[in-house]
Amino acid sequence: MSLSPDDLTPLRVNDSADVRPESPREVKRRRMVWISGLLLAAALLAGVVFPVSYVAEHPGPTVNTIGDVDLGEGEEPVLSIEGTETYPVDGALDMTTVSVQGPPTGATFAIDVLFGWMFPHVSLTPSATVYPSNVSSSEVQETNTVAMNTSQSWAMAAALEYLEIDYTQHLFVHDFAEGAEATDLLRRGDQVIAANGHPITGLQGLKDAVDDSAPEPVTLTIERDGEQHKIDVPVTEAEDGSYQIGIYLDSEFDFPYDFEVSLGDVGGASAGMMFALGIIEKLTEENLVDGDHIAGTGTIDPDGTVGPIGGILQKVYGAQRSGATVFLAPEANCPELDDKVPDGITVYSVSSLEQAVEIVKSHDTPEAENVTTCG
Image (tube, rainbow, N blue to C red; front, side):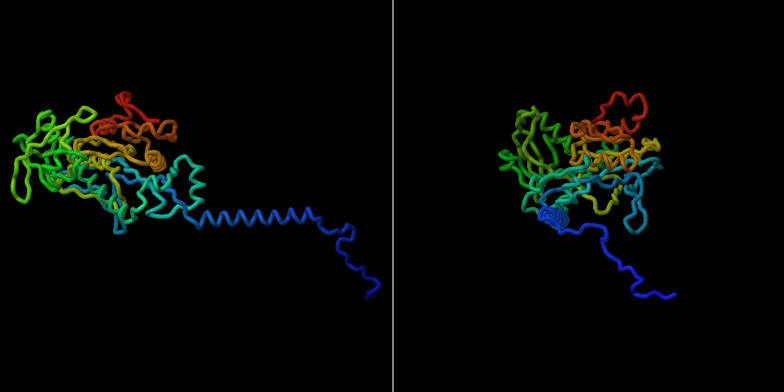
């Protein structure tokens, strides 16, 4: 059967609907939607492309100081000690880090700031309050490298001090306090050999000599340009009641063992306490960690004093994410953790290396009830 054109029904669009043009109000509304979309897209693009002057701190990776690390050429111990017997370890003593994003070492964008405000473990700070305006990325990295190297030496000294193993510390005049009378008597680079006739082998010995002399001057024997000189240096009382001679010291150490740290591109002084704990663990026959996963942070002085650090909240979150159940925090940082410690990790307050060792050994026993927790 064939069909003629008269048999076909033409197809009509909107056959049963009323077709009418858009009203001016609808046209305006549609234009506003498009404009809003374009503005949002531009804002998002600006947030991704244009940097802002903020430093963002995020939880960084953790490193087990008594474990191994792979720096691209196979695994090697984080802490290597040669010249004496070391003992097997079981567990983890994690040093913690902060990932820093922003000038002068990188860039932070508006979208980073926006997301940072949404998470409690991200810290946002105007870069001008963190770094001087004229500091360069290379200067920041150099400062962090020097601080890391110093913390490693001080950690070894503190560990040996705790273990009552002899070592020698050479003290040198590095700088002077403002207005100190020692400025006219000593020079940068002078090595302090003795105080009041007694040989000085460490910072504590010099502090003791100054305290014993107060308020009278302390007689320092110094070596300068290969010659020794005896100089009477005035002793003054500080606001906190301690005695001082107004000099800043640098130090070099002679250790009985060879000591090396393998970490890669990590800087700063905040891992000092965890290095010291790792050294003690390796040099102690008793297994102190005993299979536990412990993390922490804090600077260390050769006398074992634990000092405060930056980024404590980020480090606690980083430790918790890595599986640690115990965290050792400097006593001075504890107030920053009030009501902010994440679930699943207990933070202990420490002020000395001796206290940190005791917590490592007894955190899961009744003896740990006598220590202070943070948060």
